[in-house]
Length: 423
Image (cartoon, rainbow, N blue to C red; front, side, top):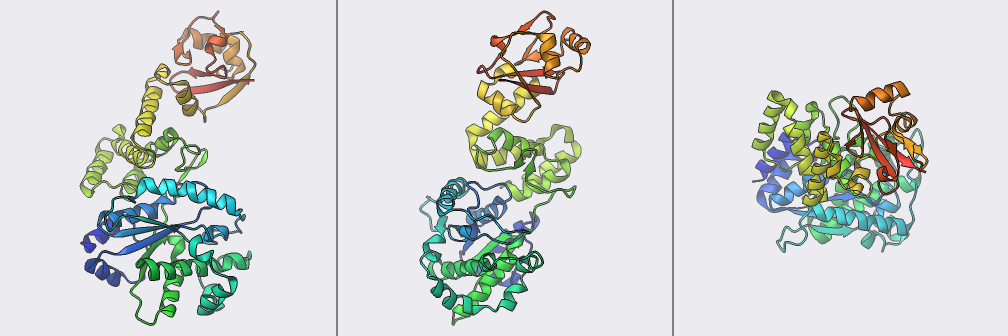
């Protein structure tokens, strides 16, 4: 039932602006609908902010509707001014194509493209039709449909007028409108969804549809609100920057840690937005946040669901194993590669590959502030090297302590880690 789906989206906080709420619900009640959402290949990976509209589109597929994923091989050459205060740096065609391939692989983890069912997802690239147009064709077929006054009134353009906007980015909304027109004509797409910053582009697309079709256009658009944290800080950033879906940019362990460190004030909201758990499951976890917050069941579930979705079961198991080993202080349970991944963001120190007394070693690495404190730490059992506790003041740190002949993990106390790297 369409109303059931739309009600679920409202409960999850996934509906922001709609062009015609009653009309869309009527359409969804009457038939299985083809919807689309686009992403521009500005990088070779999406980050977690990109996937909220994608996951919303996946919810429609789970209710029998057909998702169309548009990767903007053409619009990615231009750059969307929405949500930006300055011009994008243009990329080469080769870089854009490389980015397209990276994003395509990530979308295939989220959507079912190969079921053979009528609602199997389809992937399209607007380079295939916009790239075939001449400049004259584009201006005659689309440029004449909208006035400059209309385009200047859109928020994504108006917000840039004081700083200035190039004609290239000014034309972006018309290119996206051409996408909606092409998909409506050739793929039967009737609904476009996007983030809240896409409202101007979506409504422009509907305006173009009305002007390029003689019959009444039965098409709709809606946007999803910007995801924010309860404390007002920006969502989707970690200490290392953006949280990417590419394992080479954000490892599965780092990805898992991002979600498991979600604040209690945010975790139920994120379970609604990002996971496919049922209302009953989420409400049960919400109760545990209130009654047993120390167990962090909601955070563990959120981290597991997201890591499994983006990186797969094996990567999730590895992320959990690293997390548990660090919690128990059992570094011997980890491979060298896992240790390097787990400790890439801890404080580091550089030292020469020399045999050195343990007291001097931890002072030089600034693990302990003085030799006197270093001796106390060692004797009290507070120092470990690569997971092995060392209490001998005469202990020599040498090649046997260098993992991959490149680094040593030093722990002081329960949670203070330092990675010593060798020159």
